[in-house]
Image (cartoon, rainbow, N blue to C red):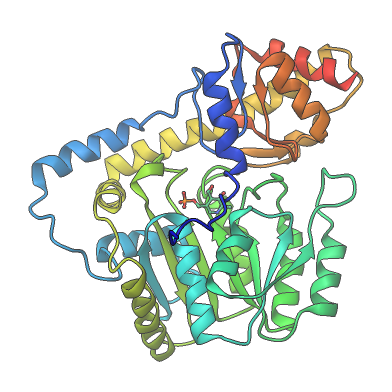
Length: 397
Ligand code: PLP
């Protein structure tokens, strides 16, 4: 008999499956609000002009395709450190390791925990990005969830969150936090909420693992780091996983990092060596091209300014779409107030649409949303807004 004959087919990725169905749909008004990538008015995910400019420079100047060090490019690491921490932490207490995307960083973090912190559990928000529990499970790190979404499904249950952590987390456990633009809800803690979360981190001696995949998509590059930096005032150890997939539009280039904050330089050096060991056995060393793009841009004040402008225009487009959606929904007279979308941040929002309504939007109107009702706001389009809102109003009635 054949060795693979007993294998069962794994279920397809729920979100990517929807995109396939979208591709095959012949409805000229169709809209894909499922997969989490930024889109422009025409539904395309563009390459930033500043990225093209950096690539031109790299094409002319790049002198080798030799391996990068295990921990990646040192210039890139320094750029990431400044973006994430500013001057919140002394440089010699930080370790930055370049990883293939934010996902690569999370996987390295998970393997690091499994081998170096074998007692810990990871507390994840409920809900969270579907890949979070999957990554920890693959690495063999146990997980639990803390309350995050309130019963109204439009706001944060801060009291519930803090209570779960106070009552159930053990000293030394890891708390997974979304640095900004919570995926899938779009609901972020306020500045004051972050202070209360930081208090619990300190009280319970929790190790924060901050997933920072959307820096610059919420309120701005520096503003989006406020939560993370508030937490760092209450603990001297942390892990941060950064991604430049979204804010540089470098999805397929796999650019990310794991940053570790240690209590002192000596601890940082030891931690660096363990992170490197994890990388070595996973993928040996990271890809060069995407990190060169980021380092080229951040190493040149003019390109940096151009990047900030392009990022800001993506951010503003999302904000504009949120506003236009809320207004247009109002004008349909459906009686449903979507004003809560204006308080949410980043690419995603929980719309409150039920799985049945989501199904009807797909079959009747060619509008693709994931079953939880999570909407990729960036997938909306100004020219199709009326059609979209009329369709939503019709499935709500
Ligand atoms: N974390 C969250 C919450 C995300 O939504 C994503 C991307 O969708 C990632 C991490 C990882 O992104 P990537 O591995 O593409 O950089």
